[in-house]
Amino acid sequence: MRTKTINMLKAIKIRIYPNQEQEIYITKLLGSCRFLFNNCLAYKISEYNQKHSVTFGELGKYLIELKSREEYSWLRESHSKVLQQTLINLDIAYKNFFKNGFGFPNFKSKKDNKQSCRFPLDAISKINGNRINIIKQLKDIHFKCSTNDEKYLNHNQNNIKSATLSKTKSNKYYFSILIEDGRIKQLPKTNDVIGIDLGIKSFIVDSNGDEYENIKIKRNNQKKLIKLSRQLSKKVNGSNNKNKARIKLAKFHEKLNNIKENYLHEISKKLLNENQVIVMEDLNVSGMMKNHNLARSIQELSLNRFKNMLIYKAKWYGRDLIEIDRWFPSSKLCNCCGYRNTELTLVDRTWTCPSCKTIHSRDLNAAINIKNEGLRILSIGLSSPQLTSMESSGYTLNEIEKECSNN
Image 1 (cartoon, one colour):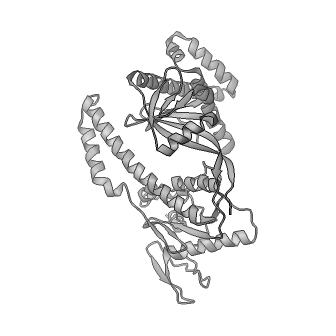
Image 2: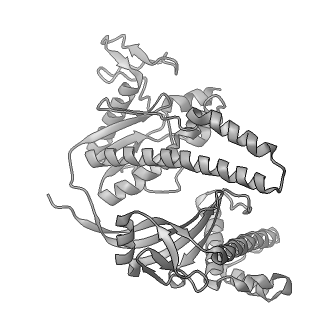
Image 3: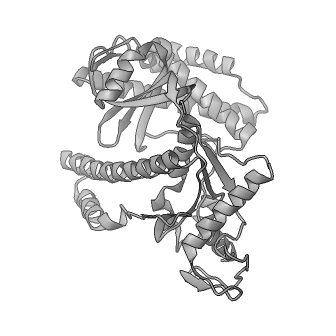
């Protein structure tokens, strides 16, 4: 069976190595964007309290007014297209709060984990080999990425839509380039359907009986994290040693996050390569985080991140991702006879069905029930609750949510 191609937006993230002069300019640019975002957000809030809704056109006029003031003359040094993109980002975030119920925009701080600004298409010049020209002040910057990504960028640079420049707490610079690609190949269709049960003891147990361990990346490295944090706290504020200790801790956090990110990519790729339909539970992580006995374990799993990976990869490769109702009793139902065990608690990892005497592994039984419910949804032709929104809230174990709601 032939694979078909579709038009998709694909992001390639590269690490860039600006020189000292370029680093200074980037720092000023990020500071200008942060100042503009905060100032305009305060302006919108102030006007809203006076019963006036600030339009995007009025934001543009406000930017011109800020640039004209002598105390803000340094804003003129920043690229105008980048500053305009900051206004666009603010306007979108503000509208999302009122129209879609997303969180209200927060004021930005220079102590945030990551500083970033967006470059529109006409602010990006050219890619040549492993060198990139962004704007006049950021020319001929060396970058690193995989060989395949480097070839891809050089071949598709005419399809670039936008790019985001970011600086991490460990003083690393990254450039994420968004490209419209009409050559992404969808995988051949299969008849395989799988249900996955997300958990704490095991990260995933699927309906085929395969188990993916919870690598507990932070808990297994807790001693070193505590050691580095203590070293940082003992340094004198404002000293060079304090900054070195801060960067050392930030680099270790990045290392752990990269290990976990790679692990999530490996699992999501394997599941999507082998199955046409993946069925998972629709559960609310934010609600379960209120249970302090489970909050750390749930946060460490990065369930939102894993689900988002499944969302965009399923769209890329022509797979179906289905969520079942969050109150579906996947762990308490016997997958053989349908008996419902209302006495089951979180402590019980195995249980015996009183009706058919089948001995169940809690997680495997839940995964099979999730798969069966997904098949039922498909068979009766219900509108598929396919996961398509990258901003949708994350979900985890059904039984954990119910346990939390009882506390």
